[in-house]
Length: 98
Image (cartoon, rainbow, N blue to C red; front, side):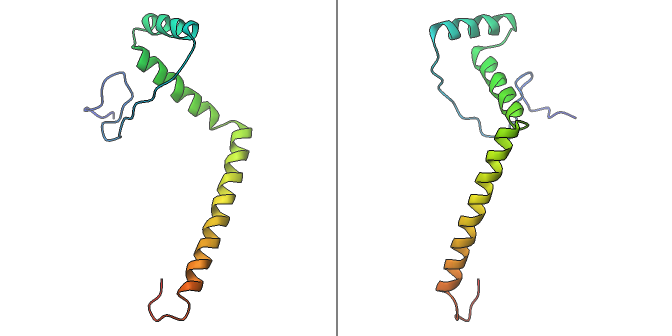
């Protein structure tokens, strides 16, 4: 069941922080976006948000993006392990543990 407090047609979760995003585009792209928004009975902001959300979802299944994400995750894990090791070395031998 949907949240009765959510704004209809926006996809916004009222519990989630909404942050503005400024996007620079050509006059031609802006004009086309305005026409599409008008044809879809939405604001330019809503049309842009929907397009970005679609792109994000599409990117989540892109094999190249997934491969790069795994590389970034592995790097983060290596860095975290190195920092954990450094902290353990600093406090090695102390009675109170981490």
